[in-house]
Amino acid sequence: MSPMNSSSATAPIASQHFGRTSEASSVADAPSHAPDAAPDAGTAASTAQTRSHRKLLIAGVAAAAVLAGVGYWYRGTFYEDTDDAQVDGYISNIAPRIGGTVTAVRVDDNQAVAPGALLVELDPSDYRVARDQAQATLAQAEAQLRAEQPNVAITQTSNDTLVSTSSSDVASGRAGLAEAQRSLAQAVAQLAQAKANDQLSQVDRERAENLYRTGAIAKSEYDAKESAAAASIAGVDALRESVEAARRRIDDQGAKLHAAVSRETEAKSNAPQTLETKRASVDLRQASVDIAKSQLEQAELNLTYTHIVTPVGGIVGKRSVNLGDRVNVGQELLALTQTDKLWVTANFRETQVRRMHEGQHVKVYVDALDHDFEGEVESLAAATGSRYSVLPPENATGNYVKVVQRLPVRIHLLPGQPGLERLRPGMSAEPEVRVK
Image (cartoon, rainbow, N blue to C red; front, side, top):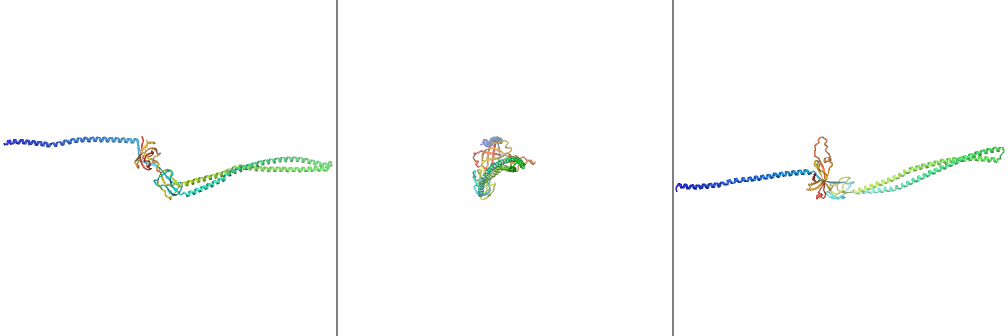
C-alpha cells in the first residue's frame, strides 16, 4: 500500500476518530449544561412560594392585630375587670355575756355548726345561788305588798269616819251655842221682868211701911209686903246668876264649837295626805316587787348564759378557749364564719366605676377553685378605701401627689350555682363587670 493511500486511509479513520471524539465531547459536555438550567427553575419556584408565605404571614399578623384591636376595644368598651378583689362574708366573734369557769367546750376549729348549737358551757353554781336569792327577795317583797295594800282602805275609812264625826261635833256645837244663846236671852228677859216686879215690891213695901206707921194696916199685912219685897230681891239675884250662867254656857259652847271646827278642818286637811301617804307606801312596795322581779329575771338570764350557743350557722375558727379557763364578759372565745351568705368585694379604680351601677352582670373567677361564678353589682361604697383607713390621706399638707383611688364594689353572687359551698371569705377573685 502506498503512503498516499495510507494517508488517505488514515484521514478517514482520523476523521472518524475526531468525529467520535467531538461527539464524545459533546456528550460529555451535555451534562455540564443541564444542571445550570435546573437550579434556575427551582429557585424561581422557591421564591414564589416564599413570597406567598410571606404575604400569608403578613395577612395573618394584620388580621390578628385587627382582631386584637377589636377585642381590646370591645373589652375596654363593654367590660371592667380587676384582680384586687376577694370573697367576703360575715365573721361573728363569739364572747360570753357573763364571767365564769369553762366546764365544757363542744366544738373545734373548722367544725360546721347549726343555729342554736351549744358551743361552750360555764359553771352555773354561782348563778343558781343568785337565782334562788332573787326568788326569795321577790317573795319577801310580795308579802310586804300584801301587808300594805289593806292599809289604804283602812285609812280611807278612818279618814271618812273622822271627818264625819268632826262634822257632827261641829253641828252639835252650833246647836248647843244656839241653845245657850236662847237661854241667855230668856234669862235676860226674866231678869228684866224680875227687876220690874222687884221695883213694884219695894214700892209696896215702902207704902206698907208708911201705912203701918200710921196704923192704917195691920202688922201682918206689913210683914207680908216686906217678905214679898225680900223675895223679889232674892228672885232678881237668882235671875242675875242665871244670866251669868247662861253667858258662861255660851262661852263654853263657843269654845266647844271652835274646837269642833278645828278638828273638822284638820280632819279634812290631813285625810287626803294620810291617804296619799298610805298609797305611796303601797306604790313603794309595788316598786320593790317590780325590782325583785327584774332581778329574778336577770338571774335566770345569767343562768341561761352559762350555755353559750351560736346565734347563726357557720364554721368555727380561731378557737381560743379551753376547758378550765376563766373567762370574762366580752372576751373573744372563737370566731364563726357565716358561709351561707357570701359576696365579693372588688376594689375598682375610680376611673372604672363611672359607668358602673347596681344590677349589672358580673362574672367572677375564683383562683382557689379555678371556677367562674355569676353575680351582679349590689352596691358601691360610700367612700374610697383610703377614707376608711386608720390614717386617711391629708391633701392639704402641701406635699400632694395624685394617686388613683380605689372604690370598693359589693358583688352579689347569684344563688343556686355549683361550688358556692366551697367559697370561703378571703379567697382571691377576679370579677369582670359588663358595663355596657
